[in-house]
Length: 308
Image: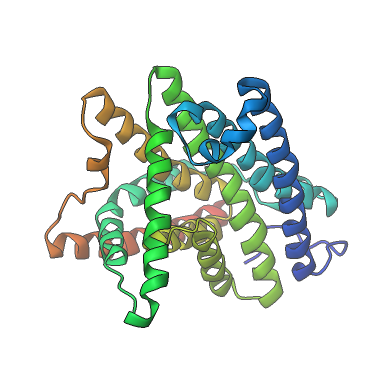
């Protein structure tokens, strides 16, 4: 299944991947430098001595850290795939298939994201129980330290002092990643791997693994990989990147809204990480219905295309 009209001017898909990586490195460097300049303007040259505090999400510098996150999303994930499409002399909307989403499919995406939550909770609990062999205990300890540091930064980011903070968090954590990461991974990486190997399913899972690995959160690798695969199938079956963007947005926005609700009701944020705790058959039912809904999404998308 091709999402775009074949174009003889397109270069080899492997070269497209390398070009996409090059643009991401350039974009990350330029926008990272811009973020540093803006932070120096805000905090002064004294920031140089406290730069470790800035990038660690210290509450004193949280505004600066958010500036880094926002500009990083733009420079590393949003602009590179746009640059790739323009290099191929194609419209971005055609290159990545920004077809108008169908109402039924949009509703199905929302239902899938809700129904899959218990199953995703089970994968989180399963992944967090990961134990490495004794000879890898040093690596395991390092992984746990990285996980704790990432969690500390996450808590610092999602804390809100006003409604404006909530809006900024929603843009930073839900809107920009949903657009940027789907453009980069599903639009750029998955599309190129599909064309290189002529295997959509292989491309979906390779991209999902890369998508999860790049977050460098080992105890959340499995659920994030499955999310990535889910977004990949929404893109593949739906024929429009909007469905993957919507699913990604719902997943991230739920976390932002849950944190906002908990703070409004004086609940500790670490409670958000505690599983709800469904009975075993609840997780099983969630998995079965989720798979069935993906099949229904696929069939509905095929019917919609036949009617066009």
